[in-house]
Amino acid sequence: MARMHSRKKGKSGSKRPESKTPSWAPYKEKEVEKLVIKFAKAGKTTSEIGIILRDSYGIHSVKTLTQKRIGQVLEENNLSKELPEDLLNLIGKLVNVKAHHEKNNHDQTSKRGVQLTISKINRLVKYYKKSKKLPADWKFNQDRMKMYLE
Image (tube, rainbow, N blue to C red; front, side, top):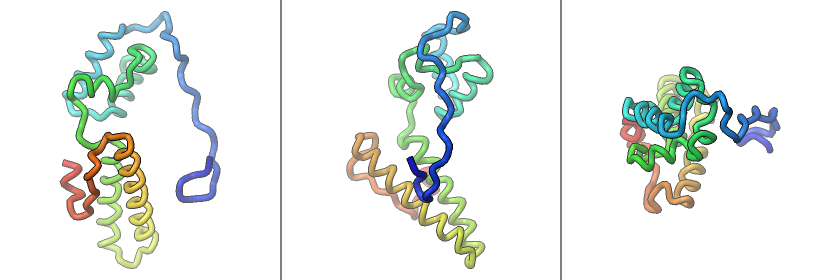
């Protein structure tokens, strides 16, 4: 499949870990859920939680141990955020690129970066409205971008 804003194909991604729980796995299902909840209360995002569990605890995949994704565990315990993480990351990127473009007005590459990032945000918003993760009347407002990040 081609990339979003270029015609390049790119390389295929890495392989997923095995779907069955290995016999040497140090943690059981309830322990993993407790760790996820602990890190979420500490203010970590879902991707940060996954990286910490992989690198520090040797948990290669939360889904193979618990049959639930990290986001599902957080939703069950009412710890999920209002906006999805990827949408927040794109909004943060837009804030940075816009700030750069305001300082460097003649930088046309940054102007294009702003346009591409806005289109990615709109595409994600459309998807999240369809899948009912965002309310149907939610609109992305560029004037309130920094408020979304707080």
